[in-house]
Amino acid sequence: PVNDAPVGNTDNYTVVEGSTSSLASVLTNDTDVENNPLTVGIFATNNAGVGTQTANGSNTVTTALGGTVVMNADGTFTYTAPARNHATVDTDGPDIDSFVYRSNDGSLNSTAWTTVNITLTDTVPIAVNDVDSVGVGSSVTGNVITGAGGVSADTLNIDSPFNLTNVVLTTGTLVSNNLDNATNVRTIVTSNGTLAIDLDDGNYTYTAGVTPIVVTNPTNNASFTSAGVGLFGFDTQEPYNTAGNINSGLNLGNLNATSAGRVRFRDNGGEADDGAGVEQNAGSNNTDRIENTEQLVINLGVASRTTNIAVSNLFAGETAIWDLYSSTGAYISSGTTGGVASGQTNVSISSGTAFSYVVLRSTANGSHFRVDGITIIPEPSAVSDVFTYTLSDSDGDTSNATLTLNYDTTTTAFN
Image (tube, rainbow, N blue to C red; front, side):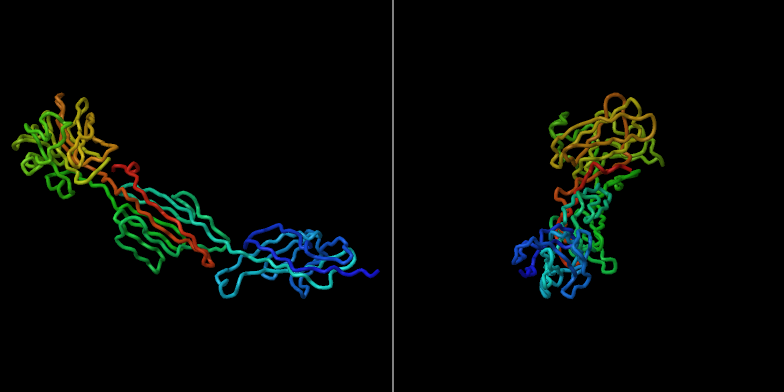
């Protein structure tokens, strides 16, 4: 009897661009009249037989779109897909790669080439939400693509290069949004800070808009008022709602021009005994310090959880007492700071509750001191800045994610 050649039928597969896949046999839908076992005899790039190879599990053929195929005799094959520009899919249709083969029944190859079509699906980047924090008066850097400074890197596909095509403020108060066309850096100013982000590579710098309030070496009341800080002195009087009861809260009505007039300053060109004190009337250098039964009330002008007060003339064995009050004058907490052998003493105050007023007072152990400077860390806005960015690959696929910038007052150091 005459042996008829096998007949191949077109095969169709779908893979992701840039991937390497082990695919099922192309022989599954091929036929042979004699039902002889089939193998793949040869395979090639196209019907012209370009690059024809024997199917032996090691020979390689380049496909029509630049992929590679290693064909096994049993019809299974390994396919490495090329990366493709899918930006023109709408006009050119999907990317379909192909190669051809001839099946063999043991003695004859099929008379015609059989086509294997492989549809290449596009890959898309996956942007990942990032969270970063900045200290008051400082800046932070990072990269939304690599995840530096944030949470984790975006998932990038094979369609490089990648860039940002859009960055907008989605939570927060916008002040301005500008793009420098020469550098492709977008600068977004908010009520909390300033984000400068490079659209080409995702690098960013966020600069805090909230900065420390600093007064150093004050010589008069204007040194404080120009910084928004108010000083009020109480000699035989008291600033509390109930006399002698610090827990009763501050009587804010007593923080007036009269009590401000009891604040005395000494400027001796150094820090040993300079600064602000309290005295009913202009007194000597020794009596216008903050002494027992006297209080100096400091209106910070802002809410704060961290404030540092420099005091002079508080020596070892002496103690300064501080009391904290809210913006409404409600009592929060108290603490003490001991003096040093020489020089200034730093009264470092930290509170889990925001405070707006600090009362400094002395003890009965001969402590007497002056305020010679203050550094206030304002309480940042409770609303974080949230920016939404669009990550794009080379053929126009996009993914959106957010960059959230929080304030971290614990990272702020006093100078």
